[in-house]
View 1 (tube, rainbow, N blue to C red):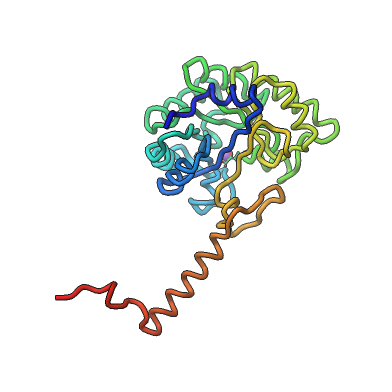
View 2: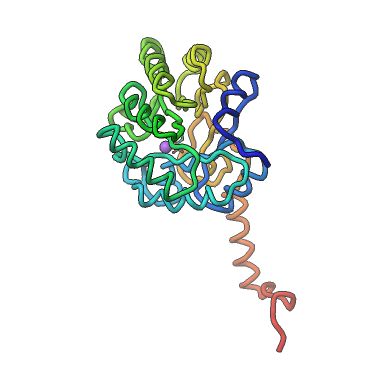
Length: 266
Ligand code: KIV
Ligand code: NA
């Protein structure tokens, strides 16, 4: 299959074809999503609360994300793979951001990086893009600033829409190839999407964005925590696995497993 590249994102917006993305943190799900035609895979720092056992994304480090990103990038043939820069690995300066982006690009086979922030991250985006590394921006609700934002709150409502538009223009100006809009009102997302030339990718930003992205463990019904309202669950993996454990325990207790077909003769 022909690899997805940044121009696929531009063409999709121009032609009105919606873009789809999922997160993944491992080889097997990455292979499945890729083979089923997902356009891009984000190895998100949402690994923090889906794989690594933290409550938030804040403790996640570059050293923790690199092996996960490598596993995903090595597993896909077509999808565009994006490495998420964790909290504390890019904010200090454009130099720090570029250094971190280089680590992901050299130590994994990711195709791009993502970082949070609009105007405040424009210099970082510009420097990374100048080095030849595509950047996906991320504005609206930015989980790494959860405490500064005062919790999981919808962004871009009322007066806030002007700041959202300034952030969107800033990341486009800085050279981002796409921008994630997380948890913003549908109307604000529509305005940003109409104004920008680069595609907008919604995570809980309604139907008007150029694409949709979800955290795969929420999307597949595997997460045990609170699922945000904007997630549609496309499977019930938690239910399937729970039933499987019950069946396994029952079979072992009754001797139904293992049968002769699962056992070796002399
Ligand atoms: O880490 C992540 O999964 C993300 C998406 C929710 C945008 O940043
Ligand atoms: Na993230």
